[in-house]
Length: 387
Image (cartoon, rainbow, N blue to C red):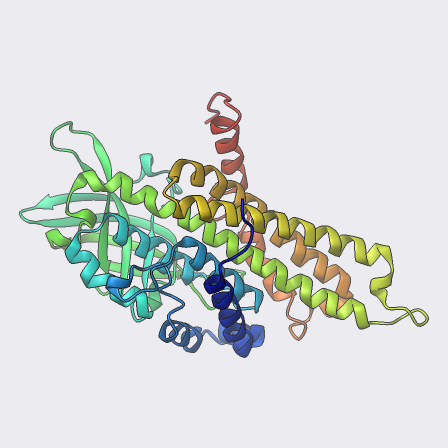
């Protein structure tokens, strides 16, 4: 058992940290509040190869795995720049295409993932079904050699920044007559695809959307893997990377908040000559939050290591646990930091309260803490399924 990063991973962490700090949280907040996007940071990260660390070298990537991508997510968040599109494009979409796409699809899409010039977002959640793919209402049906997609999706991140959206639909299996999941790469400018932005109480440069698919016509090669048999494995291929990178982003955010708070409490003096951080009522909550963040960080490392070793079932358990732990730890860290800073914690200047909405959402999405507890109860504790 080895908890040390390789020299190359250490170098990646240091380099990404330096890049993130050059931009910083004030850049992130300014983009979010002005309605802009973190395009400059994304493009530079792409040029430096950080967005394609998990893409195979034959397609222009770094040849690493989810461990490396989790490092990128964590360090940018720790610099105050938690980029949600890292989760949906490099983690979910690139992994799905790499593991289950056809060779033509790999050649077409992976080089763009590798240099950051391509953004592909992910659409599974629906107004009625949530993310339960057994009940999805978006349906794909054949029309000659083409496919027609119809349905609705909600809470789809970054559609306005992406060239494509990876849509999860259901289609009839000709041999059994049963509906089964299938994934399609849909251009965001496709005829019949419209969107409506959702107003969210979260400070984020990435927008959320409702999507409407009205007989969106797609060629046969838009079907991921070129076969309906690829649908279910392709869908599950994206879930572990999603959970692990969301967790890494949460841990990075927690680290950022604790760093802001400890810098403040170590120098803030109100009563006498001692800093407020010398008082246990201030120091202990911060120390507790730091412990929770580090515990979540260890589970992320375990989950990513298992995933990169091809141990998907074990990675699924640890990925869910990591996501749960990181969601709780990030929310605790930001809330504790706000409390430690007092009134300053609620100002934009000190850059902590700006994260409250995001870390609260991290306990809901992309899978709620309650569904993770259901998963653990059933698959780890052997309890009867409760839903």
